[in-house]
Length: 220
Image (tube, rainbow, N blue to C red):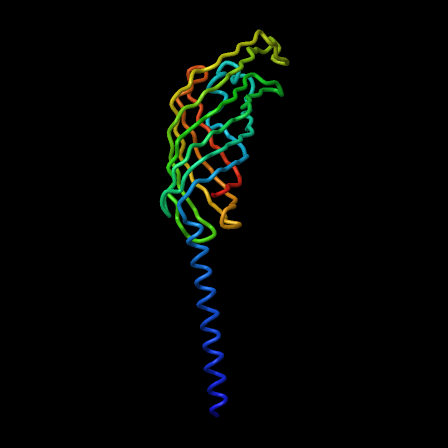
């Protein structure tokens, strides 16, 4: 009986020791994930305009629908995690050509670049950490317009001319959120969605868009 009790006590102590070691290891891993320090990131995804082409080409849209095409977006960021729940970063984003098409022909296209200073509020919840972000900065755009009209029989489109313009850097804002997935103490994947508003104007109208991306980050 004494031998059985001693064996049970030893097994219990061994289990408690293993549980404490695992708990300490998990606690150390969590502490590493919320540590202060710098980070770099790179992401790729898409940009979707929130304004319809008919806003710009009202006469044309009376006789044909205008399709708004989504675009490729690439972003990079450098930041510093200040507290377990707070980070500050600078984010640059380049958006390839938004296009507006009618009857298979492009009638306008625009590319954009944007830089913002962001504040991130992070939920320090282990290996998966959701966050919200808000930022302000500036954007600059290039707009190419192909002037078109329909023939009298309304069966084909005639190109009248070509116009290109470049806007100045204007104030911009970004609002969004995402998820960080920690792969190691220093490497993480993230997905993010944000809405961008800018004072840039195409043909007198602002052009907000939604940016959705997936990327990788390295924490030092």
